[in-house]
Length: 527
Ligand code: GLN
Image (cartoon, rainbow, N blue to C red):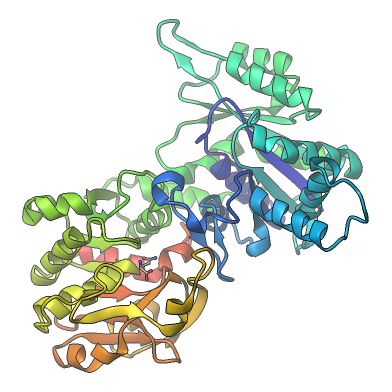
């Protein structure tokens, strides 16, 4: 097994995750098998308890692990099979170390960051030894952050132990463009690399995020002052679509540097999957406008996977896409017709808490009445049930007990096991569950299968006590779990109106767009 470590410098939000995923994609195109691990220095056990306003989306794996959104990039860009062990926080490391300390496992030693915490980090670099040729390990945060230090020290030790030709370091930096000087500046990158060098880490590749092309002079300067061979200075320009990054890094020869460093003889890199995707994205056609009505719209990354799955659905239909983000609270106040007038489809994604709920309900009601294609995901499905209950089945005040515990009609409510859950972290219905699909439904036409599996992350459920009354008014239950839980609903009289309790967005990829998003965009395009 070979290991690639990806660190970041200068500023956060440089797209380290995308870079890591793109390098992985290129290695896959060269015939290698890759896997990923993400280490995050925060103390939360996982991002499951963090607000999307702060941290962006929580990405869910098949096994129910709640992880950083970078794992979404890894899964979208490659075939890596990720698990709970692919994502690790300082909180998890410390929890393990402290549990071992209480158990007396350290046999009287003083338990310290070095070696005990760093040993635990190193152990997690290699466990489990997956079926892959290369493991790409990304460290969250920026070099120089205090809480990241034990991870960098563990990387240094690890590289020493398993040898230089088995490890490769990629450092992602920003080259800011200073307008008054009309120059791309290398000093912040130099200083960030100097920090790394001081920690005993010598980057092999310097990924330079820049909005302007680098001149040869800049490359030479970075190489000399950052102690990186000239061909290891790789330009990573801003691009319109994230799916152009693999092709761009290919042009820069990033994969060749990796292969040469490891001494791996690989196939010629077959980039066709990526060039196909970018060609489709660039095809000039009429755009399709989709309204995304939710609570966290102002945070760019809060609906990352939903956004990408919509992009994939548009790619599948050969259409450029515009996602119009509408804040749920704004939809409460403003004229809904005006807000949605340019849109030919409405999507309401997942979310928690009551902020903006009534606005989302208005958008759903509008989509239902105006025959606008609608896709409700998790919270979006629950709200579609509430809207239907209130306005079609005449159940006044129908609600979810999440928003109104005293509602006369709790059409969405908690199961007993959720009512008893004391801790908030890791106690939702999480991970992949099966769903039986009813024939002759939109859901069935989209999936073309009777049995589907999707990832879940929610506490509340469709309340079975309301099943008969809602279906007698025309709600179709198009998917169920073997236990009887409702997994999907739709409106047979509507051209395309689907709500699904799970999160299909987590399984969509640019070359394998998710069928539900593909069909949603297709229906919207027919409007
Ligand atoms: N808040 C809802 C629940 O917990 C929906 C969750 C979600 O959309 N992920 O059931």
